[in-house]
Image (tube, rainbow, N blue to C red; front, side, top):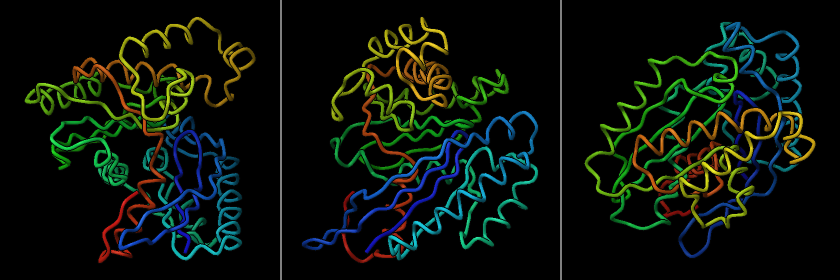
Length: 297
């Protein structure tokens, strides 16, 4: 049995096809195929509040390709979500209607639902009980935060602070202040709080830091990496460091967001499990369709 997850983000569009494994009363999933298309909808959405015809056409073509791939892989269930860029574009509903006509039932989800789906990957269950965590997912248009203690969700929120939004000078000082206040209010009761970082940029930063999957990135290490990356021009981050064109620019504001949140929450380090929204979508599908059996991701 195979499930699929589609994430229409602000910087890229992703399709994850996963094999569902049932073994001794538990359910887990194994990633089979991940396709990432560098389609940046955020520039249109955050500046013009409208997705251009050319990008809308590319998005439709991508959805047709994803629909065909799901058919070839014989996917039995899927969920397709659009996040910050589609939330803000004035023509998102008409684009969503065209996407549905391709056979993809697209949902444009709110920030809080996005945070809940990301949290649904339940990474904290593999990291230890009786600890408090700040779960940070940084995207192109928004940052999703969740605080949980003893594996229980305490609070979650979404803020319009994202890498593309910063590059386009569309982030607002009051939103940064709101995020600062929220983090401080929800973490100050914990003596020690651990960070969990998700999203394409922190995954890449983890690899650049030569860290193992299960080894956290300290504040000092991330700050050093940020200064190193920032010492290169955009062109050299692409040609010398080998970063993809659509990663080389956004990785700098991503560092800034993570470093700022680590300060707000007094985080000494961030654990990087290298998962994202698509992983949470697969787990959400498992929870909805196979609820009677205990499962693990």
